[in-house]
Image (cartoon, rainbow, N blue to C red; front, side):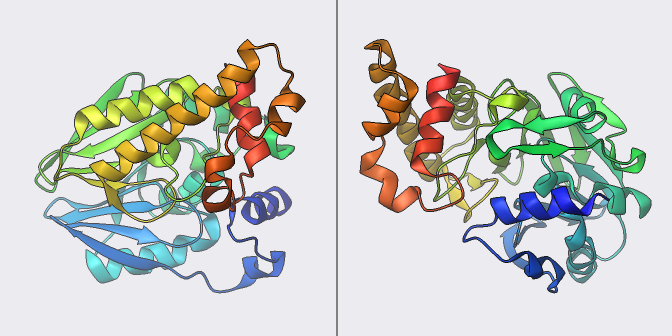
Length: 295
């Protein structure tokens, strides 16, 4: 594991910002029971879903590598036994950092084709000025898909659905049909401005389309797990969709009027939500840049 890039991204993606020394602190994982044998594992990094039952345990995402021990302890406490599968919602290290550890413990890693491609080669996340080396072979997904796949485990038909050019070019929604629980991955940042990784094929239009896909899947009883932030429901996802539309339209109006990126940033087109949502690691000017450059 290359420590410096991991430390850098950890420091950038944690909100509020943490000292690098916190990387050495004991990881804290809290669990929330969503019913139907499904829990969400909360803490630094992306939100993890755990399904446990007669068919064993499987995870949606696995946070940072340093949290693997705490994740496996939570799995043992809730579901007993090993993790059979890990589904990655995209390639970023706060969602795939535990892949190597989980694979070495026997799990099969599953993800979109582009997740394996990006993890297999040098990457550069321009928005963070972060060079990411290839992942170890053991961390790579061994089962990949194009448009999607379905798993039948623990009494659920688990639909894994690719959504194109959204947060990245390898995003997947994961829907537990019988439990009516939808994991949105980093398509959905609940309570903060979203990160749209343009250098990994993301776009504002793709983000909006992906959320709309989630809204088609969800009903008024669906539990929605965001990639970051507290668990919510369809109404919360719908409110986020309206925000995405308002941000896009506000930035688009300036761009269509011939305003430069800097002029658009200076106009503060997201001012109405900057104080409440622009306090995470994505600041208002960065969100405007993501939208402006992807239109």
